[in-house]
Structures are given as C-alpha cells and as structure tokens.
Image 1: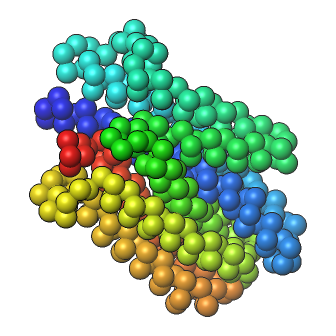
Image 2: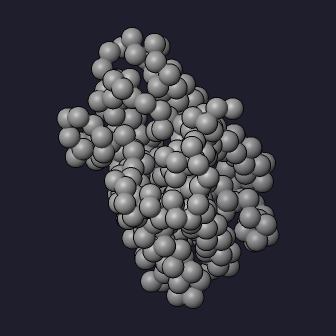
Length: 311
C-alpha cells in the first residue's frame, strides 16, 4: 500500500469514528429530550420504563463521547501522518506542530474542545441527569457547528459561509435520522427495557414519535446533500469521470436504499408494533437500516478526504 493510500485510510477511519460518535450522541440526546418526553405526555411510558430507558441512553451517550475523544486523537495522528509521515516518523512534537501551527490545526482545536465539553457533559449527566442532558445537547450542537471546519466547505472558492451552512445542516439532518434511529434501536434492544416491556408497547410509542421526525430529517439530508453536490460538482460528466463523482454516486445510491428500508419500516412494520412479533421484526429491519447507515458513513468518511473534481 502506498503512503498516499495509507494516509487516506488513516484519515477516513478517524473521520468515520467521528461520525459514529457524533451521530450516537445526537441520537441519545434527541431520544432522551424529545422522543421520550412526548411519549411521557401521551402516557405511553411508565415510570419503570423511563428509568430503564434513561439508563440505556446514558450508556449510548457515554460510549459516543468516548468514541469522539478517541477519534479526535486519531484524526490528529492521521493528519500528521498525511503531512509528515510519508517522509519521517510521526512523533508527539510533529503532532503538536500540526495542532498548533497549521490552518488545519486551528480548525481542529475547536472540535477538540467541543469533544471535551461533550465528555464532561455526559459524565455530569450520570450525576445530575437534568442539567447533564441539556449540557450534552449543547455540546452536540457545538460539535455540529465545528465538525465541518476541517472539510471541503472551508476551501470553496466562492466563499465558505454557504458550503459550511449546508454541511452543518447535512450533519444535523443525518444525526436526527440515523442517530435517533440508533438511539431508538439501542433502547428497544436493551435487556433492561425488554424485561419491563414484554408486549412491546414502548417500542410502538417510540417509533410513533420517531417516524415523522425521521421523514423531516431525511428531507433535510436530501436537500442539503443535493445543494452541496451542486456546489462541488461543476459538470455532470464529473460524476462518472472522477473518483469523487463515482464515490458520491455510490453514496447517493446507498442513501436511497437505506431510505427505502426506512420507508418499509414506516409503512409495513410500524402498524404491527405493540406485539412481541412486531418488535422482533422491527429490530431486524431497523438493524438492516442502521447497518446500511454505517456503510454510508464509511463512504462519506472517504469522500470528504478526496480531492474535489475541480482539483
């Protein structure tokens, strides 16, 4: 494997872990602060269920924050390797140089502080759930704003404001769709939740609230993704004549397949919820949707480190 290919692999792997952590954090926050309260107001979550759900979501948020912390360090290593590693060994001093004295580093540091904020907020939620969850939500918002700062949006010749805004919207939409799906799935698959929800009533309640949110989030992803592609791809032929274009087409195809699975869950599986068999079917089909989502994140992680067609 050539040095350039290895650098791309390092950068993509680190970015993929970042996406997993960010989406997981967003999903835990949205389920805990939006989906669950709506279910509580409708009277579909009993106190015993609420305790089990909250515990599972705190676990998801903690794992996501740890992933983000590991990914931040991995991204610094990968970027240092991409800059120096082809010619010399990566050292702590070189990593410090990249973090402090490069343009990439000045944009990565806010992401590092946002990640630290998220980790502290999640730990605080273990002690004080009320304020801790809102602090975690604030950290997720800061991450959504800062993560695009080291991507293609900041090098667009027409200005950075519009591409950056689209990337923020794209990331938030993806988090609301796939991250919240992960939060719902992690909840209904938890042994603690299943022990007190034998008939699957909680599953039906969570999905009923999540479904319209997912539809809106998918719409936001498609609109912001399409607008971003319009900015980056100058000619239709670049979609099949460049590596970036082919990878982008692959991502779009995967997104439509994932959306089709989600539509099947909404139209066919959701009406059958409230029964143990319906819950089992949802776990399988939603798991497939989430697995496809992970592939999309992997493709995206590669895409954001590829040269744009104009380059």
